Length: 205
Image (cartoon, rainbow, N blue to C red; front, side, top):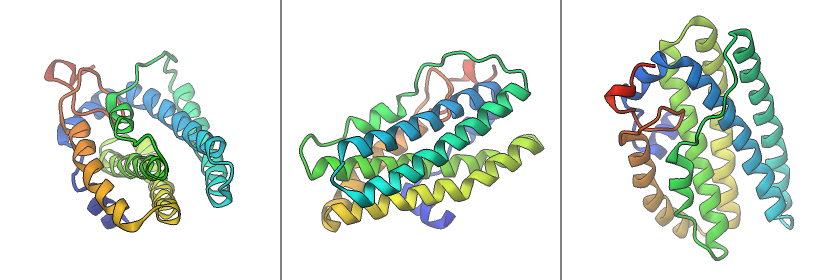
């Protein structure tokens, strides 16, 4: 499973991001919470947008429920650690990827599903990358999320092939992949779960 995800992504999380995550655990958890909510929202939005596609609706309904459970689990950890809740600006990651979405069907659904697959794959890769460097509780928690994130990645890929053309999918992956790689490798002004490594001044909270 991990090999498939690493092959799909074609790049690994920079060590500088991992170092920043260890130094900014509070922000990591707060933004992770937000990411789980956004993942559930994405699934629900797809259900609303493509109401005539029962396979997609069923898959997204299950995914949304699971993402909300993860949201609640992260929130529980945040409360237990007495981390104050506060709003965080979004990383440029998701918006940078969504700028690639074609505006006409069937290209639109293919791109949305593939970008969702990239987001889930990168989440899985980052959980695996950072887990060994965190405290025992978070290491166990993040390691436990690997299977579900990998399953979500596979589900989006399956749906893309169900509703799209294999040749087009291959071409679009080739377009999206370098953009995704740059978004997680180029320095960012703020540390977030899907950000690039923060500039040196921000590497320590």
